[in-house]
Amino acid sequence: MAAATHRRRVPQERLTAHPEFNQGMELNGKVFGRGYETVPLGRALESLAPVRGRRWRGMMVFPPDMRNPRAQSTTWYRDLVSGVLDRGGGVFIARTDGGNHWIVVDAVSDTHVQIRDPARQQSQVITLEDFRNRFMGDVVVPEASQ
Image (cartoon, rainbow, N blue to C red; front, side, top):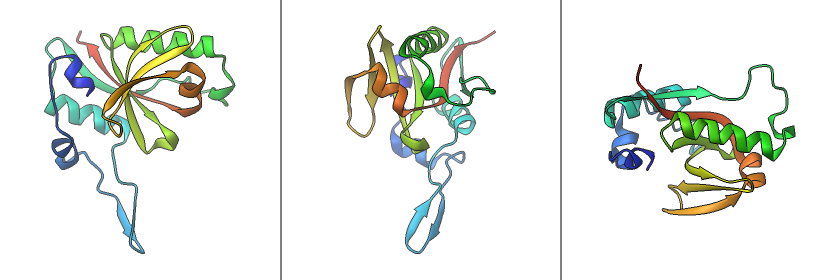
């Protein structure tokens, strides 16, 4: 979904078939740990959806010494999201909901964030407060190449 902003499309089936995808471990009929970690998702997108003049990079955007990111103000989050959007050419991928889910972030205002959620297959606007409560600090960004 984020790659489409830069005119690249990667079907979910190709992403989950990539060697960087963690197939997880089955225990008592349940699968644990299935999905992408931040840096491997960046590497997978770099190989599956290269963008001319950009490089997909996975990273943590919270400062390493920050103890409670959710204690930060919504203004702090707005500025953070705005900066990452600038870095990604108007888009980035964010880990949410306890680390098991990734969404695409397209825009931010003083009070709202526009996202695309692969689980819902549509764009939606959520409050900055809701984003703050769901965001894990991990992002994958199509940064401008040096």
